[in-house]
Length: 230
Image (tube, rainbow, N blue to C red):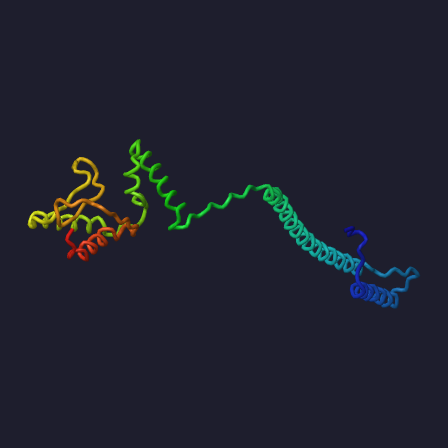
């Protein structure tokens, strides 16, 4: 904005006009007492007023213009920032169309042949990784035994159950508790429990219960089968 071309408004010009008239009136009054052919009123006060009003107006316009410019700069900065952010995010958005989506993993349904085979193969892998080798039979009887299920109080219940069975074996001649394998230096896989010490296992039932309920289930099965001969 060119401040040199700024002019006073109507009201300010009127105020300067009144000041000039006041100077002319003063000059007329002076001529009554001091006649003089030269008519030259003193407009210095009117000029000072005009200059003062003009400076005030220019100052006001400058302040207004600065505020307008600041607001404009702020708006431009926001737009620029938004544009930069959009430009920055744009490559990522473009890359999305080239992303390779992971093939959804097929979830095996419990109770199916595929689920059983998957458990068996995982058992072979686990035994190979932990022991260096595997045995098909041991993998079979340990199916689902390597899970991270909540064990609950199963360990304490198992110890209590085995202690009671060992006491019963000592007290009753017609009761047998057989540990498999018989070598105590090796890990216990399972126990044979029966009334007849010479019994042979003819049939097996494999139950897949929750880990925390194994000892409790075994106890209740033995309790309910108590009246059987073998």
